[in-house]
Amino acid sequence: MRTTVVLFTRDLRLHDHPALHEAQRRGKVVPAFVLDDAILESSSGRPNRVGFLIDSLRDLDASLKSKEARLVIRRGDVVAETMGIAEDAGADALFMSADYSKYARTREQRLGSACEGRGIEFRTFDGVSVVAPGDVTPANGDHFKVFTPYFSKWKAAGRRSVHEAPRSLDSPSSIRVGRIPAPDTLVSGNPSPETPAGGENAGRERLDNWLRTRLAPYATSHDDLAADDTSRLSPYLHFGCISPRYVEQRARGRQGGEDFIRPICWRDFYNQILAVTPDYPREDDRSRGDKRARNRDIFVAWKEGRTGYPIVDAGMRQLQREGFMHNRARLITASFLTKVCYVDWTWGAGHFFDLLVDGDMANNSGNWQWVAGTGNDTRPYRVLNPIRQAERYDPSGDYVRRYVEELAGVEGKRVHQPWQLEGDERKRLDYPDRIVDHEEGMLAYRARHDRS
Image (tube, rainbow, N blue to C red; front, top):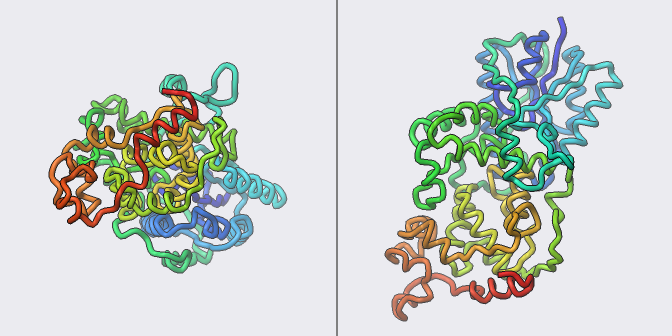
C-alpha cells in the first residue's frame, strides 16, 4: 500500500486539510511536524507564538490518537528530518500545504529537490488561504496593489470544497513518534501572562461561540475598543488550527458575515503581495522618500506603553499582557509611531512580531506598511489623531482604564488627556508626560509631504 508523509506547518488541524484529505485517499498516512531550528532561532521563535504552537501540537496529537494515528515529532533541519521520516516509513510521497513567505518558498524547493532525488512524489496544496495567490490577478499585472478591486474579484472567485476531518487514519505503527517538548526548552524568555490556549478544538469552539453570539452586530461593534467585539480568531488562523476557507463558509450569507469576511480577505490580499514581493516584510513597497528617525528613547517609551497618550499606552500594554491587540488599537499605535513620532515602521513591525501570538509575516508587515504610507493605502499621507480616535472608539474611556492602571480613577473621557487635569489631580497620577506633542507631530509630518 502507498504511504504518504503529511508534513504539517501552519495548518495544525484535521478538519478541512486538503493535503491530509488527499493523503488519506491514497493509502497510509504519516502525520509529521518538524520543530525547525531555522525558525526557532529566527524572529519567529518567540515565547508567545512558541507556547501557542506547542499547545496546538499537543491538541493535534490528541486528535490524531482518536483517529488511530500519532503525530511524529522531530527537531532539526526540516529537510533532513522529513526525509528521515519518509525513509523510516518507506513513504513514496510527501504532501504539505503551500505557504508564501521567502523562507517557506525556499523550504518547499529544498523538500521538492530532496524528494526528486529519492524518487518520492512531492505535492503542495492550498491550505492557508481562501483564494490562493495567483488565482485572482488584475488584467495588467501579477498581483493586486489596491484592496477594493481585489476584494471584488476575490468574492466572485471559485472556491475549493471544505473537507471533513478523517474518521480514521491508517498509519504505520513502527515509526518512532518522538515527544512534544515544553516551550521553555525551545526558546528563552517568558510568555505574556494572558495568552490564549492553542489548538484546533479551542479554535473551533471559539468560532462556534462567536458566530452564534457576536457575528450579527459585528459591522457596528468591531471598532468599539472597550466592547472587544472582535473574534480573536487570528492566532488560530495564523497557525491553521482552523482554516480560513472553513471560517468564510460558516460566515457567508449570515447577518454580519460580509463585514466579518472582509478581514479574512485582507489576509489573502497580503499573501498575494508577499508571494511576489518576498522582501515586503523588510523594505518599503512604495517608497515615499521618507528618512524616518531612529529615536531609541521614543521607541522604548512606545514599546513600554509610557508615551503619555493613554489610548496608545493601553494598546501597547494590552499587547504586553495578552500577546494580542485590538485591531483599531493596532492602527492607532502604529500611526502614532510612524506619523506622529516619525519612527521607522520596521522597528514597530518588529516589536509587534516579537509579541503577537497571531504574528503573521504577510499580515503584520502589510498592515504596518499600510499605516506608514509605504504600502497599499490609497491615502498614504493620512494621520490618525490619537485623541480623536480615542474619543470616537473609546468614548467612555473603559478600554484605557482596563489596561492603564494609573488612570483607573479618572472618570469618563477626561482619561484620554490627563495633561489637561487640574494640577493636584494630575500630580497624584503616577503617569508619564507626553513624549511628543501630537498636533506638532502631525503638522510636521504633513509639512514634510506637503499634504493636508
